[in-house]
Length: 293
Image (cartoon, rainbow, N blue to C red):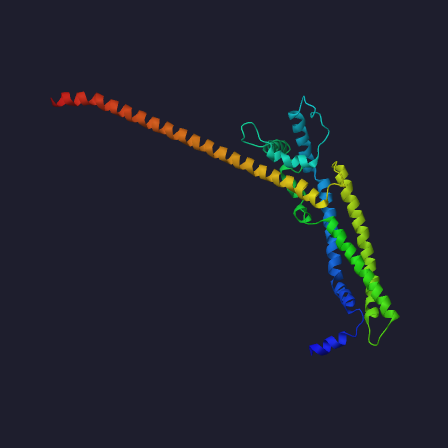
């Protein structure tokens, strides 16, 4: 029963450490694949941001608008700006408080898109479609990833220590070193490959930050993709929807006004016809009265 089981395992040296090693072995492949997939996601998302022509064109449009608005001041004639400036566009409102600077930028982008209709150019309004992995990559933290990686390396060290101890003080029926040593060789190779993948991913990501004039020491992966890029594209799409809604409402109001004008015109014509008819009756009436008098 239970008592016999605990009596048997009580004879196993360093039982807790060995149990941790076996649990780690069971979960290793899944954990290794998840960590590798996270790095691939960061790489693909970084490449999407770098390669997005609509994003670059939108940023260029924002720069032109900013320089125009700041013309004649110390802020005019800028060659660039920080990415966090993009997220502030939705907070800058017009004098009449009817639209934001983001709405205006979207309208400019839409006008440029229409001028390029029929070409192979990807519309700026479709910027979100050029970066499909943004929603998912926002959940990846390279610092958390590195902590998990260090934890895996620590477990390999524990396995190596326990296997060596088992070889040094063997006991009958102990299969720990025979099971763990081949796994240790396999896992060590996989961990080394993960390390190389991490280094190349971080370099690619940090090079991209520099490309966008951001400091790799100050901007984390989740902040770049989440707050700066995804936050902006969501605000951009929201402004796009607002502009479209405003346009549809204006069209509806225009059609309603035209319909009311047509109805008024028809009513006036109807009243005019009725007046003409009454006038004709008035002319006929004296003739009838004369005929019967």
